[in-house]
Amino acid sequence: MKFDIVSIFPELFDAPLSCGMIRVAREKGIISVNTIDPRAMTSDGVIDDYQFGGGAGMVFKPEPLTSALESVLTKDSTLVSLTPKGERLTQKMVADLTRHKHIVLICGRYKGVDERINEIFKPMEISIGDYVLSGGEIAALAIIDTITRLLTGVLGNKDSADSDSFQTNLLEAPIYTRPHVFMKYRVPEVLRGGNHKQITEWRRRKSLEATLERRPDLLANSVFSKKDFEILLEVLNG
Image 1 (cartoon, rainbow, N blue to C red):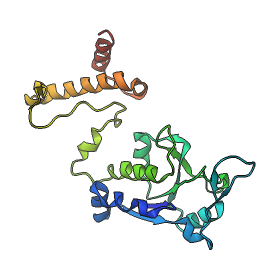
Image 2 (image 1 turned 135 degrees about the vertical axis):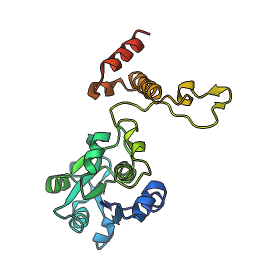
Image 3 (image 1 turned 135 degrees about the horizontal axis):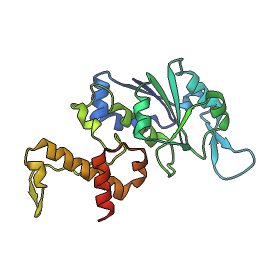
Image 4 (image 1 turned 90 degrees about the vertical axis):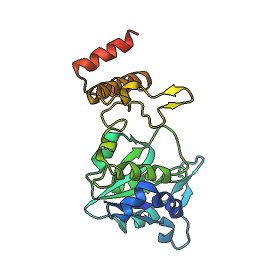
């Protein structure tokens, strides 16, 4: 998969793209990542201006962004604009994005991007949460990271991704490692007993409990067995 990032701060990506899983994916040729600086598309380096109608904050000019986008977009490209106005990123959306060959990410800055960019190019608009960042660069890194870890050959064990939180619209069960006793806190005995059926049941129960307690909104889109309903009723009834 190919990623192109349109950003006025391409240097911001140097360290994150050279670490951990993303570095491995790049070295294996599973992904490639390129940055395009819209400033390089101008004669004077100016990429922002005051907004029509007045108001605080500068606006990303359409000309340099258009030139940058036209330099990388092809018929196989999927254009994504990172903006607080976009649809909130979910694990399902991430899974859908893994099916695309080429993703171009627009990293907005200032008050925002001239609306004519949306009218001309019609990008997917994505938000990574209900808060405002100073630019779309961190959001772009989040998109690349979440997509990359789902691609075949990136993680050593595919089950590691399949069991993550949100993969089944539930939060992940608690996890433990050695030592089995730490500051008087013990690993639950069921996890050390070797009975895989009991371990699976324990993890499912803990996953349901955590989701009900912390993110009950996720339960509306989850698929439950009869046993799951019984567990949820037990938790609700104390």
